[in-house]
Length: 243
Image (cartoon, rainbow, N blue to C red; front, top):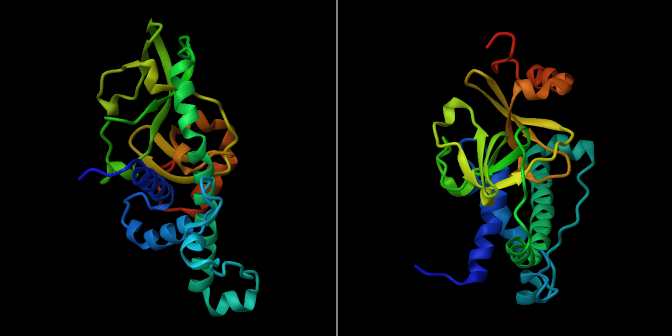
């Protein structure tokens, strides 16, 4: 069934934030969908300068609340958790709508600007398009993988990457599928997995959940305090010391 561009964009925004907020097995996305719908309908759109809710009903839903009262939080922990999550998702959708307003211009510029040039040893992100993963739903999967090191320059538009053996795919990619990697400070861990070597799912400061990336433990020697904190909170998870 065909759909118009506006519907496609709405679906992309909702999929993007479900990707960022659903758990690793993607079993809770249906619980998050009502929050996603409310947040989208209560976010201002650039084309109308109105929220869809106000355009339909001519008033804004009550959205302000004081969630700092410890006594109330103790009595109604589920309600406070829901309110916190709603606020986070609302802020996220508002940011995604701002990002969507400049997307067309960015796509145009992408085809007008010269392709980035990489050298052996440079680290890059790899687009996850057409690459299978262990996640059940591709739409909610990570948008890019890595970062990986460039091992060889095949041409100005093709590069060989140093991939882990577990990926079992061809390691030469067109430059359109690559993005330069910029190192960032790590605020916290989202998850980790053990496949020899040990990998951690990292959430980067200043970036949304779509920029989370799996990093081998060898890349995170500068964050030993955070690794210790992660395993203190998750004592049953595999660690570099006991596997």
